[in-house]
Length: 178
Image (tube, rainbow, N blue to C red; front, side, top):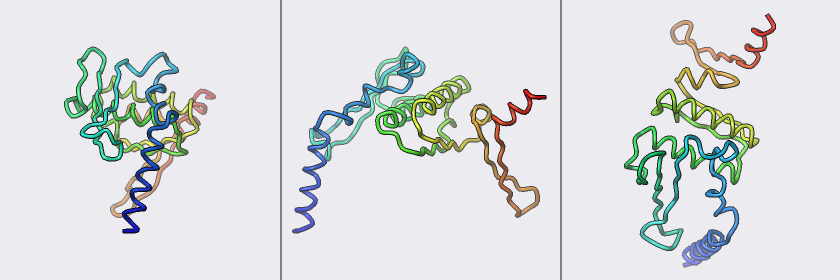
């Protein structure tokens, strides 16, 4: 009985916080890419509560409209469109409430080369507009080439792993000095 009462009290507090105007409603006002004149490549998206008006009981649908396409739920988009939509949502939240670090694991895997460039441009903008440090785990050479520093694990001899670090900004400065 005591736990049920605490849960009801916590749910009431959370519902009241979600209903208050303020930071919970500013994600839509801060789309990623806004500083560059709009979201990367255009398009829009919105979050919709489904199956209940109570935010704590409802499901959440993401309705996205990539440039030149009709609005569709996330499950009906291609893998690349899903990835870009999810990254735009993550970055919009970071613009609203930045965290000190963000780890993105293979988020560029479903993207073609053009969209990888757009993703890297957006990531550059995010690093300029927030104090968040981004750790990107990738195997994509385009993404790796756009990063400031690379870390890797190599196995020079069987069973012996070695950590390798390359400061790409330092390498570029060194090359320009020669």
